[in-house]
Picture (cartoon, one colour):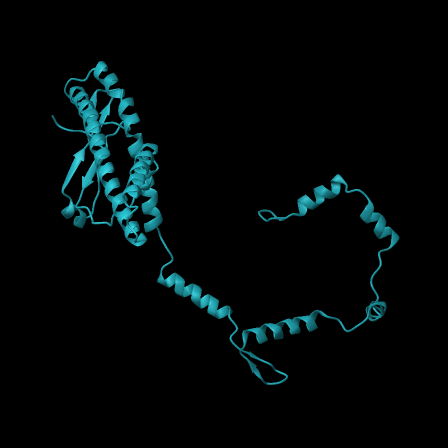
Length: 276
């Protein structure tokens, strides 16, 4: 039976609508592609496999957050410490504990993964059989049976959460970071703002000590914003200036209410397509 990526429920027909576009180097490194059963949406997932790169081992944080894993691991760690009471070297016990936890998690997660994979394969095989029946002899009963995938969805939700957690970790490690050019630009900006030396005009001396430079700037702005003149000098200054004064008629005009006619005249005088 030919395989397809989409099955129409309205018109019992199958299509190949989903593709993976890859570059030529990635195409040469591709080992195989698989069209999976319909389990998530009305389109089937299509996967492309290539050789995996070797990455260092690390603790599976999502696995250790599992309550069942915590209980079992805590129990075995207590037993580990009971068997190492006679060892006087603390560093030796610490390194041995790291190896013990690592081997325990690898063994435990491998066993859980085998059980999970076996159950997943059984459910996918069941869904795949129903799909083959739907592709060869379409019927409403087969279509309704194909829609009943709640058991698979409930079983794989834990695996989906693990993939999301793994994706977040990969994003935090591999996301865009400040590169060499950005760091160099920031360094240049900081260097441009930094005052390394100050020439005192009245003495002709050069100050290079940062504390002396700060003190000189502080004294300069203190003298700049401090006034040697008294309040009487300011009052005398304004007395010599003749300021315009509004007449009674002008005050009455300003205090009178705004008329509708005045508003209309202002609106008519406004230039079109321009902000007021």
